[in-house]
Length: 502
Ligand code: HEM
Image (cartoon, rainbow, N blue to C red; front, side):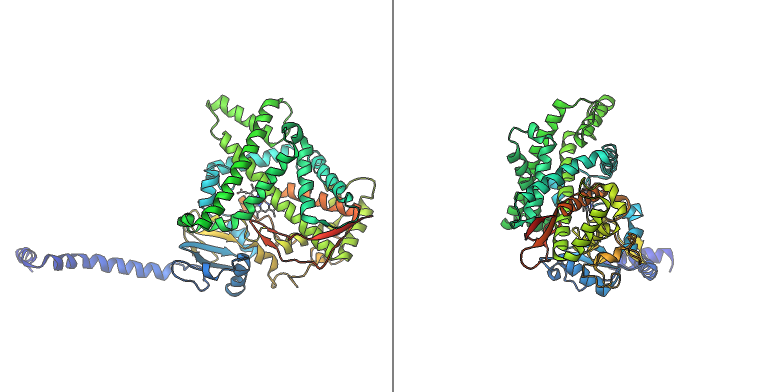
């Protein structure tokens, strides 16, 4: 066709046909590229059956979602994907794969979740923006180390808590008491004994109120959590009311924490760093000098970080301690062996210390088995992929949420023989003399986000557990009920027990 003929054709033809003709080579080119890239592009991990818009939500066990995630893991293997609403979630079900993923920075982001956005407002540790997270995680770890967590200084404070719990239990004089309330009260009393009584004119009522608020957060979070998937549901009265309860409790706890901060400001010597709050005040003053005003160590950051450390630390360690008492009361022969080990290594004249733990393999095996079987944080804390990447041969798109299926990791019957039975010996060497913790055991997760409270939790659980068993023989009243109750962590139900002095 001559150029003039082409011009004539274009000017006389239907404009739509011309456009179509011009677009055709581009469309063909795009289709070819797409076909080529699909051939080479990895697919998403396999999925369970899902519905449009809702994804897997209608098929999740509403009471215990981790059981559904675990059932799908049995069928789909170490990695699968699903949608919660329109959000893509990748679920990791095997310890080795979790370690492999979390060793890579691109798997260590956190989702931008509605509940944390509204409550922490970009502050705190777990859900803070990246730069703030790095600084405050490092700061918390450095402060814990400086305060002697895992060393003698901190242990003195934990001994106070254990001692108060022993006094509290002794007060029941062999009559039945509620395990749950006793451990909570022991913890609150220790909090009081650490000087809060002087700090707060309202004394115990104030501390008790603070813990009550913390419990409300856990109680109501279950319903409010749906807002992370469908933020629009805030208009539904029941969801709105639950979330209001959570924010009300968090605000009220913030009031308590602010009072504590002000008291520390007024009484800080700046020479003796008494605790996390004193260390925060120091860092704040330094930032003020260099930057003019505290931006990284702001008041809001203090409230969010301190509240989070209280909340996560308190709930997970007290729940684990309650499970430890439940399992050892339900298994008298295990309890007897722990007590024999305590008598042999510690005796009766002093309190057990964490430094005794290395000589107490059986007791440590019992506590590992409690953490494995109870798994208080069954789905960990969600991560987020920060870029398009790959894992185990599958495509993981940027912003996919990554769930750590710790429940499955610790209950997989292909990994743990008789996985639903309580068998502390699985953490001992064949001769029963040494503690052997397999790499498949990971209650504190792994990688850069691994729980920074691990050492503190281990010292606290060990000290309280061994001090109580050193003093009392525990027995359950009625049949043991191992079904958990679900909040942010899996906790024991209320159960009654008796404690006879040894
Ligand atoms: C038995 C006790 C505990 C268990 C089982 C536990 C478990 C966990 C798990 C599974 C995670 C998620 C890690 C991840 O994102 O992959 C986590 C994170 C965290 N835990 Fe713990 N934890 C315990 C005690 C504590 C204590 C005592 C504290 C504080 C004093 C604490 C503070 C935190 C914080 C701040 C994070 C967020 C870390 C980050 O995002 O970098 N935890 N914990």
